Structure formats: structure tokens, C-alpha cells
Image (cartoon, rainbow, N blue to C red; front, top):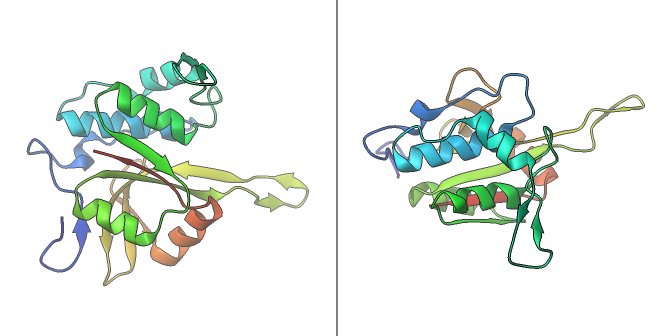
Length: 185
């Protein structure tokens, strides 16, 4: 929804703001499962899913109906695939899709339509000397402040929420990941 000062912010559902469902991932590599838990709990208006349980479930492949018949949602205890996140969201009753090369306008439209939007961003090729230390991350986009050029996130890698990222930094990191975007409603 658009606020009177021009900011875009995801509207409350069931009288509760999305921040109320934030869960910190601690030192785990479970940002994807944490996003699933927050999104589903927010959408339903109740704490139905525990992030650690979602992570364990996503570690196991699921038998699917398509080709290939196995849906691999994540590399156990490490990286979560965008189709794995959408698969879990759909399993819990949300309409969800993912795509590459989304635009900043897609982010703003999703916020206006009160969709849950999860960009995947990072520095996958980052190195320190000869050592690879690349990273990628997914977080729920909660808002956009055009005056401050800041995006706000419900980010499981932070203890408190919402957390902010400057527009230019976020867009650079998002572009590094081919502007991957997961959208649910």
C-alpha cells in the first residue's frame, strides 16, 4: 500500500504487521526456510510454521508430478533454490512464482498490491585473495522509502526488524543474482 508520504509498505493482514512474525536465523544458512515461515505465518495471521521445521522439511527432496519427478528444494543446511521456496509456499496455500530479470517496478507494484515479495541478492563471486567467500541471501521486502532511497526488509539475518538497505547497494546485489524474485499472494 502507498502511505500518505509516498512510502510503499506491505499492509497488515489480520490486524498484524509482518514484522510481528520475524524470526532470526542465527548463524544458520536458513534464510529461505525462515522467509517461508514468516510469509506463511503472516499470510495466515497465526504462527503455524516453525522455521527450523521448515528447514528440515526442505532438506528432503519431494516427489513431484513433472519432469524431473523429484523436486530438490535446497542443498541440505545450506542453499535454498527459488523453486524450493515457491514449492513450500504453494504447499501452504499461497499462490507463488519466481522469475529472473525482474525490475524495480515489479518490486513497487508488488508492494502496492500487498503481495509478499522476496528478492534474492548477493555477491556470489566475491573472493578474498584466493579464498571464495561469495554469498547470496533472500529476505522479505517490507517497504520502500523514495525520499531516503532505502528499501526495508524483514530479514532473518538480523536480530531486529525491519532492517534497511540503501537502494544503490541493494540494486547492485540484486543485479548480481540476475534480479531473482519470488512473489506470493
